[in-house]
Length: 330
Length: 210
Image (cartoon, rainbow over all chains, first blue to last red; front, side):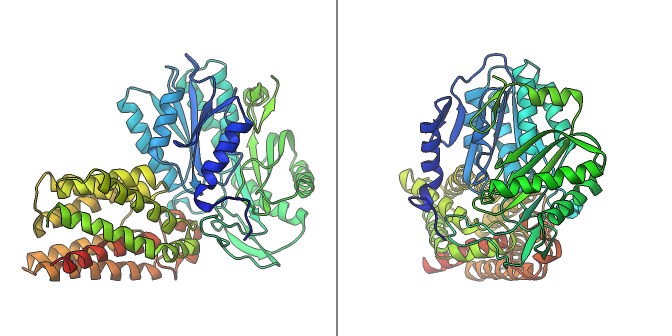
């Protein structure tokens, strides 16, 4: 598969060098693989650190900045970062008010962040971890590693970041992060596979006539394979799965997210179908995102993430944010 | 076995993981996320370099450095899990200059306990525990029965390989493969496969060095 890279081994560091060159508001340690706000640490502010495998851009590095994350640790492609990175990031952004680790629920991410939190604690830095797990594709959480953290993570980072920027304490920021996670649900649909650069070939095979319903963001399979159908039917199937888990009503924050290889034209087709479906349930899309926010390399497809808003959450969503990938109000 | 024997083992592990890199990654692509061979190969390359830069003086120190380096370089679930396994084994060996079979058996038990504590996996969950647990038990049984070093290490390696093969028919209950549910059946667990390679390399490197 053709890739715009220099070599599979250097793809993450080459991209980080590009991030550094493109965004002077960020401080990028290319060797240590840590992205922080250039104005870190913010004295007295709770700091937010997240991280995960690369290949999901703009998650997480694209969300570092005013009103969102203080630091992000990108791992190798689809591989969680290591504790050294998380510890370095935590040290760099701790402004004395404690640090929130936002961790997507994957075995590797959880284990590495757990080690980093212990090491930071040994150094006297107060760390609270919130694990996101909004993917309804994983049905039987008891007999699996549990639900995966996917699109809801973007909402958690934005809303908890806004509260931290307003000066709230670590417990309050952690509480709102958990609340957003609990109110959010996602489902992903893959039209095509994706290829990890070092592997050089697609992670899984999908024929021209089938799609994977409930795909994970690393190309790990979902609930089942079904024949390809229309945007309307696929959107309804995704929202049926979400609605069955969390009945949809009231004001919603909705993200229609591309997987990296989906034309924006098609994402807007999906968004309109999502709007139509939700209106049919008596719900209202109060806020939305349409675009690529949590991707899977060059995969084609989409995910829908829905969060049931409260007035407080809406205000925090609307609060100013200034990052490479989300920017408004400032 | 002295520090040099342990260093030779770890170098042999790095070689066999590198040789089997694509195979391990393919196993992972079937039921995970297609990076196991790549990540372990990167980790053990770093381990070999660390062992060369500052050669540890005792078997315990060799394993502790191996574990710490894996934690720092691998990422994913396998970094912390293998890292803790080697570190616990290293700690169990203490600062002894020579390790006998009984001490090695205790180190294997410590590694297994560390992995199970961190990963919360039990036998039958289709993880590395399904290779490490039967291998540790077989080694312990062999030395209790007075087996020779060669026979005890062979029992260890063969039980690990058989344990890895037995994961083919299991449904994954932990790790990323668990998302597949019944679809995880029919594939060998990549973590169990790499554990079998690591323990196979122990037998091969010790027997070759005699």
